[in-house]
Length: 373
Length: 262
Image (cartoon, rainbow over all chains, first blue to last red; front, side, top):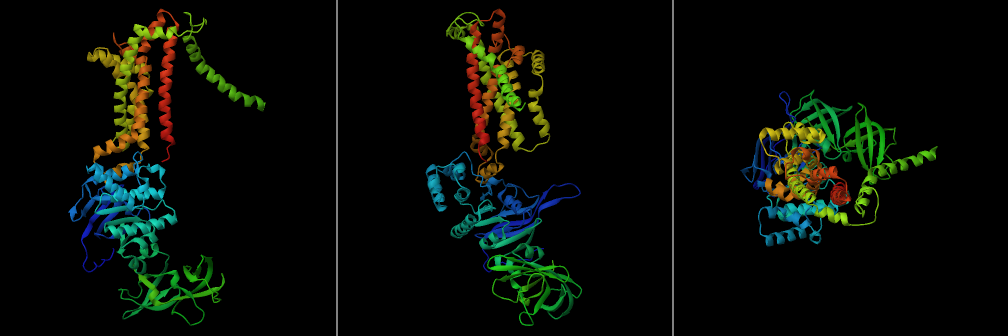
């Protein structure tokens, strides 16, 4: 279960609240599987909130329930404090930017952007002005009479953004909006969208499987797996203090080492991990004999020679070395056949052994996070 | 040996084309014949075209055919489009059975449909005339409008409906502003094809047309019995011209829709 995230002091208005939301699929009498299971979540107004997880984790289903394209099997959904469960999509004050953009192919750019205002019966002159302003804000005013098919992917993305934002929604939903863009363009759009969100102060709810994208853009991230939120927190918290094995393994590169508690005295645990024995400070309620997992970032590990250096050591055989530019990633096969990755800045350091030779890596106690679930 | 084979394919193709189009070509050529014969060339003339256009029987038949073609095409396109949209966009039980039944008239022998239709009209006491003729033509053209619109509708991105709803459009607005404009080329193609099918129809027409509502094909067939003149060739040439035009429009639109990048 996800731990409670402390609300920051002076917590602002809640934009969206999900209460015990479940969404069943492939339901049969004896076995029901849930795309989203018992989700409880509060998203604050003005927040850039991201659902992050691998495909099939339920993040898009969650977004589609907020948009109103799908109804939860059970649970309640509150938008600006008002219950919207059962309210159809066209009556919700949220707008969506689709992964495939979903621009209307028979309408030109201006008509696409003006669609939402037009169906709501806004006066023609006001539509004209707001469409123009919205397109200018995404630098697409020059393309107002062009058809979507004449635009590049990035340009279509901008138009899709303008089409959603021109309606001044209280919440903007973005479903993997940069999935189809190449890396450089994606970076540009990330910056631009983040900047736009700061400027407009609208709640953005973002869905992505790209952890780097989530970390760089979000105020808070919900890491999801198998329809369940694994952890909710800010990017730094998610990266540095993963709550469980899933989050630890999903966000960035991480060594997960199985360990056994061999003793306890006060707040110090004696551990045995892959043949290494050492003490760690911990307030977790672990007893001798319990099993746990140690999470260590590859960049926290260094090769050591002799007794100098950090106290926690793992020895094994160097099985591979992969050069990745500034760094080299080394694979170390430990005594119990598990493997450790160490990411080391390239230098003229001769202390690093050759592939096939024995080696010792070490890290500071503070670099290790003990996980029990 | 290999050379013989290399010649065989184009030769067979050519023969096939000759078999298909030679009769039509002869028919069109003799439409311009100066004499009364449909087999002996007696000089160039446009007289038979004039004759065909002033013939009262043919003109009456043409009028019936055009009215029935337009009316039945409108109805068949509307019904076929509704059925296609239901099948593509809405979940309901028995969808496959429903689709099969809609296109059943395509595979059933038309003569059976025609007899059935006649029996039904006799039973219900509906007088034979425009009504029965239009109903019969609607019956045989629904499968075509259904198949054409269904193909186009299933090619539409379902996200477009969601995007429209997301932007505040209700069901009617989505239909009028998104679905209908996007399907319009297909609906027009369906309409034209249904009109042509009705215009050409012979079997059903034979059974359910009444006095005063004899469509053109049956009128022509009746004329054949009293003697063949190039008047019929002239009429045939004009019908071919109209049909080819319609088919070209339909095909052109169809090719455009399937070539459009998704």
